[in-house]
Amino acid sequence: MADSRMAGPIDVAALRTLFPVLDQTVNGRPLAYLDNAATTQMPLPVQTAMRDFEQHDRANIHRGVHQLSQRATDDFERARSALKRYVGAGPAHELVFTSGTTDALNLAAAGLSSAGGAAAWIRPGDEIIVSGLEHHANLVPWQQAARRAGAVLRILLPDARGSLHAAELARLLTPRTRVFAVTACANATGERPPYEALLALAAEAGALTVLDAAQAVAHEVPDLSALACDLMAFSGHKMLGPMGSGALVGRREALERLVPLRYGGDMVEWVGWSEAQFKELPSRLEGGTPHIGGAIGLAAAAAFIDGVGRAAIDAHVRALRAAAAAGLAAIAGVTVLSPAASSAIVSFVAAGVHPHDLGTLLDEQGIAVRTGHHCAQPLLDHLGLGPTTRASFALYNTPEEVERLLAGVERALKVLR
Image 1 (cartoon, rainbow, N blue to C red):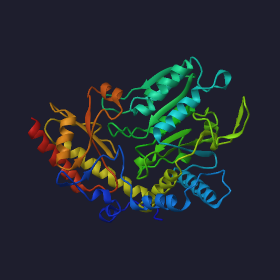
Image 2: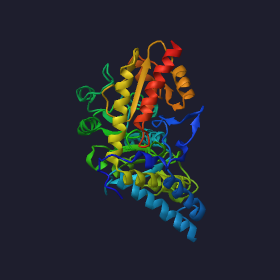
Image 3: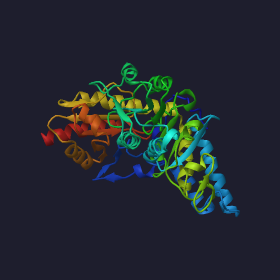
Image 4: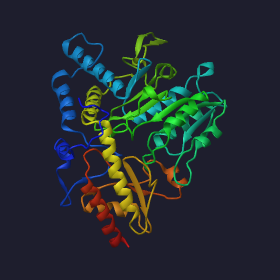
């Protein structure tokens, strides 16, 4: 495996041969897939790992004494261990498989607000702080948690440029702050907040800290061992892995505070007619048959990323983003959100043009982008922007595709204006 810290250039042409979905035309033009913040494509080695499981080891885990069940269990637990290493989890951490970031954040929010009385982490009058950069999946669950527990929800609002500041968080923190939730990268703007400093500040104040790492886990992989982070959520389909896979990983003491979201098979030690005893972590939070093939594919995706080199991928996508942001900002009437941000996402608005129309004309040129509020409507309303057009990059995208995007936007604006 290549050193994940390597920062040399990657061989994009060679990598693209491992993504056959990219080798197609759309509306008679070569596909330029620039919608990676929504879903990345899956390389052949990941597909092979999942196919091998389905063709040779497919069985349910943990309870079977036959060979297929034992092999499936070994595959599943090896995947868990591999992913813990990938995100820098140590002996004090555990990883719970989920169906993705949304599922993981719902598990966290519901689990911290469902227990009654003294056992509840969030109680009446307590406070929850959520950053204003969040995807709805890291806002709506905390809205519901506050309502359920009788707590107060506070928002760490960004400034007019869409940036978060530690001084503003310090002003919001109080002895009643029980949870602070923030993203590692805003999916609607590409803003990369100083989440390390924000998490540390909240933890020092006694809050339980939650990080949405969905938009960072494919390149700028947060290192849990170096963060003041209690719980971190991520999705497989954002990191070259399968849809319907993901994890909630964090400190054992934080995970142990969670009331299970799903009750049923494989999460119980014993069951009587009127009560049940739950298993220890992580099984206690993994009720039902998990997406075993998805877990295996997720671990294979992590291995693929490390094989290419995380730092190399990160440098590549940031360079593409910088080129796209500069080129878009040079087009008359185009405003780029968070123009100086260092990430894989660039969002923009064009005066007098609806993003859906722009996205449709780009699709006619074979360029796939995302348009709308990007599940971050409060943020875009706060910035006074409304829906935007978003391009997002992965390790297989090229500078030529950035040039196609810029030319495509100029061409579409001429038509629409």
